[in-house]
Image (cartoon, rainbow, N blue to C red; front, side, top):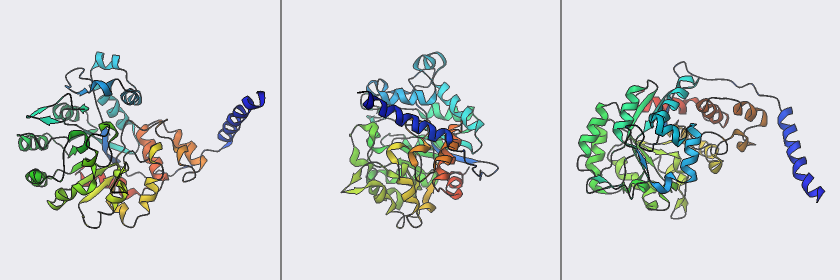
Length: 356
């Protein structure tokens, strides 16, 4: 029994010794003077203050939402006291302190729309445009990402208003919002996006938040209509969840690049423990890097979801130790992705594509 107990202790001591004896690496900071634009940062709320945001009770009581709040560094009691704006304030402060990122796009999230109203029973997360637009106007390091469900009767007016308020993109989560991107009744919506010069950020692949509902709506090939109409489409997280017709979603997405020059993919979340290897392999696909742009998936940027040590041997221990020591989450995300081989052009593309 003593030998059995000593074995894990000895292993822990050995790992601790290796960590302590591993020297810190000296990393080059190839950072343009103005910094990068993070095209994909999340905010959510419980409706505290005047946000009008909400999270479905089942999700609000889950470990997922609890982990989201811990990642931000806030509690439900703090949100009730200071309002959901506290989350936005934390992100703005993080961007302001970053050496690498100068602005971040905070994205709204429309709900499931039925009879021209949000169906709260069917909606998992709702983050209103008005709240996000107001926060982006109030905080200097944040940009407004709108979300307008195409089944709203006033979708055109909402898109025009979003553009007027400074929106740099529109976001959909088809599986969560119950939108079929291939439906031809959305053709006029797509043409309006083109007229307003608003890219469409779309989650593709299986969507964990949807808990299986509408997963077929995440097939990247359903984006063909929007692409044919001329919309600049950004596939979130490079489609690294699930598969369709036996083909992994990300491979299905990457195969579409050659046919659609207006199709892009952001690299948000690709350092997470459940996505190890996707980014390194995608960078090896010929010309794929020319269609990638930077996003962080803030605030999910730290242990246990993300750690540079998870990426050994693509990252050596000295480099991982240095990256782990970086306090600012956005800086840690950028340096980690650089260490995995992401070229400077990908980080710079977000700003150019979004007019920033």
